[in-house]
Length: 405
Image (cartoon, rainbow, N blue to C red):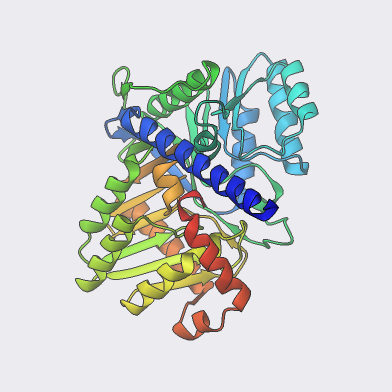
């Protein structure tokens, strides 16, 4: 009798969580904010290593004169994080306004004494997307995954790096190097990125209300004569990104290159890749050999198997951890930013990506991608068969929760 009662309670909890998630997702997807930005002129640099990222990032903060606006998904309590916090506090003593926003779930390990110290020293700290009722379970899974920095309305950063020792290859479990793609930008694109940060910060300040806003560019496009490159800023949440991913893939004619730490695509996204392969288009995917989250790696195994059987190539990056989020198509299109090629980024997370139109820069990213392939090993049918029983069982469990991984 007790066993039946426990089983009933378990099934009831599962049912309530499903109802919470289903109706929460339905409500948010019904009225998501729509960001409609025009292409902007910009100068930008690709950053692929943590050492270079933190050097440039910290130097730009040190040189700030008026404003530092920062949003990260993950920040830690380790040494590199403490250097970052010390730098923020130093800037407030110089009269610089510092607004610092982190995701409540992504940065749940951040210690309260660090937060209090930041606030005491003038840093305007806030959590974005704090879970609350109603739809608590859904909101626990709906996260601000954007990594945005804007300094003095002149310099901006977007990409995959967060703040922590693993991003400089100092985590012994994940190894060195940590491979990521991040870009540093200047030029007319900066006000657009500032708008996204301001929108998220205001939403967090007001308690993260459901928005029906339609956000467009503010002000004129002030371009400088030396800027010849342009960027599109893609801001998404609540399912908006799936259409874009599918459209980009469907427009390919010769080559699709995808780099992502988590390859768990929606059915539409995966079918688009299979269709591309049937058309004779070359499809290559890089994923990490090491896993930084449970179940995520085995959740990708069915996709790896079907993709390779259809003629695609999947590579395991085994020289550290691979965290880049990039799509390169036909050497004429490149998207990179914060969104992974998975259902969480598409249907749950708040993300921000950039699209390049310069052949020179697209080729630079493509060259970095091909170099990463050389530091990877291909997934084969034999490799799949050799996976342990434990890994295969994890894959079965992962199938049940793929949208949340």
